[in-house]
Structure formats: structure tokens, C-alpha cells
Length: 302
Image 1 (tube, rainbow, N blue to C red):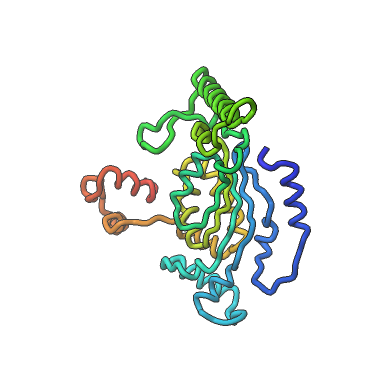
Image 2: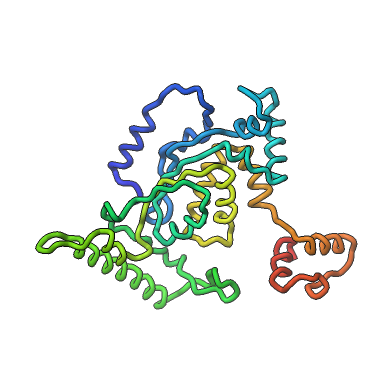
């Protein structure tokens, strides 16, 4: 269960308590505040706090005071200009703090993004819950034969059943031993900071993760991409839905220029110019490697 009845009661209480404020408020984000969005089998993402909105981005870019005098259309145009030309500091004026519950192996991939403030649940002081990520059968896949970091065909039949059985049995056995080691009944009990080393990478951890919008967009560009690992991509997808309501103009520009756009090399641009002019271009005449050509053709639809 991603959220316990006690946690849900706390969330409901927080959402019922309101206070007057003079700071910028995003109605779209207010509806997400404190709510937990279920991810995977036991995980979730929820917004704890946020600062700024689309107007804050424009205000920072113009360095104006109070409410701007520009129209909403002009604000959206400015935001698209900032995104198009890779400006960063105006987007850094917005921040978000998330509470995330996720498997440890996903957390280790997530923490590669070092441009955020993180405070993780400590297994030195506390006992981790018996909650493990067990993939759905359809999410079990063989190693990709074309990408060392990716998945290939889905596992089927007895192999899929055996893998699921191993994952469940090994996780349960490791946690049983963890509980035995830290128990002080009839023994001294091993320190929690040592006993945790025996826990599997699919056990769940939790953290608070605070990041500005510029660096959040960088995270989402990589992790909401179709090539990202499924287990972290579903978290990124959930966050995308929140950001879309928080800063709709900024997210629209991000979606257009980053998620839906592509960066082309000088060689790739030269190939496009030749193609537009009616010239035949091949991998051999493009000056690109086979990998570059494959990716290029994937972008232009060849």
C-alpha cells in the first residue's frame, strides 16, 4: 500500500488547513499540494511545497516589481523565447519540494541529478518497512541486443515465472534475516547501520527532494524520455502532470522545445539542407558514424 490510512488522514488534515498569503499562488499546483500520486506497487510522489509560477519567471527575466504590465500572451512568448534560447536563471526562480517513496535502485539512479537538495529516510536510525518493488510480469524483459542500457523482448512462460519467484523469495529472505539480526530478543542485536547492508536494492526508501524548475526540467527531459528506464520514467511522468498544472506556459515550452524537440549537430543540419535541396544522402556520405546516422534518421523519420 503506497499510503497508509494514518498518512492519508494526515494529508487530509493538511489540505483542510488554509492560511492567507501574499505570495504568488498557482491554482493548478494548489490542487496537487500534499496529495500522494501512486507510482509502481508501493511508491508515490507528492508535493510538499512550491514557490513561484509562470509570472515569476517573466518577472525575473524583466527584473520588474510587483505585477507585470505585459499581457498573458506576451508572457507566454517571453517564456518560449527563454526556453528556445536556453536561458536558465529565470526558471531557477521557481522551486518545488517533493516527497517521494521509491525503490533504492531507482533512488540511486535519481540521485545522479546532483542539482537538488535531498534528505533521505535513514536506515541507520529507523527500521525500513517490508516493502519491495516486484515488477509486473509484462515489465520483465531480456537485455537489449542493440542498447547496453536497455531492455529487449519481454520474458515469457516459465522463465518469467521463475524470475518473479526469485525476486519475491530473495527479497523476503533478506528482510527476514535483517529482522533477525537487529532483534535484541535473546541477543545483543546487530546495529541497524550494519544490518541494512543485507537488504536488496528493490526495497523502498523515501526522501524529500527540493529542486528549482530549470534543473527539474533537465531531470524530466532525461527521465520522461521514452528511452529512460521504466521504473524511473513513471515517476517522471507523474511529476510532469504536476508541473503542467503548476507552470502551464513554461511546461508547454519545455514540452515543445525539449521533450518534443531534438538537438542536431552541424553534420546533421548539413544533411537536412542537402535533402531539402533534393540531394540523396546516405550514411557513407553524411560524415556520421553508424550510431549517429541511426539516431539522425530516427529524428527525421527515415
